[in-house]
Length: 238
Image (cartoon, rainbow, N blue to C red; front, side, top):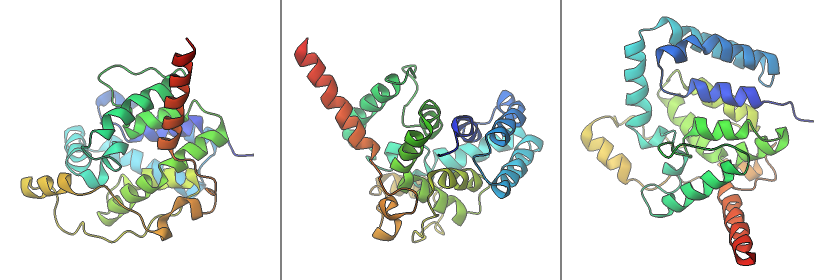
């Protein structure tokens, strides 16, 4: 039986949210939750503890600037899941609606200004699911997590450890994605090009359906389509 990791999902999501004073103050509590559930190995826990120390003792303004420059200015490491799937296509809006409804089916209700594909929000959703279903749902977005992790590892960025922990929970190995991040992507020209790039594609070697521990992946997009069909069927009966 898989170990419950509901608090660990929430805690890792917390690590990936915009750093504010209250956020920094809650990091010890997040680490306690991870320790208590023991869903991660000791080595990974030690790495998260070291990251928390860096985040707590560092300058808050610098930490905020680093977060924005990293996650908000590069599509390659965006924490908005559908950026890696739909980009700016019209399909993204429909996917957002369906994901909100998927969340609502578990009792997770979002404000209108909250985007459901934000990774910490998705982790909050996973925390409400039974252990095995949560792991399968994490596998659903496994290729995206692998891509973000690879990009962060290439940059030797401190947030890489959080994505590595998520891959551990999903039973996925880091992906070997061809590097093109040696070209800076924080200039206006590079940003424009990055946001025009096609969504990330993955080769067979990175297919989570062929990765140990994720042999029965059921993509989240398919789940949302099924939810859509169920809703239409219900409406037809009323």
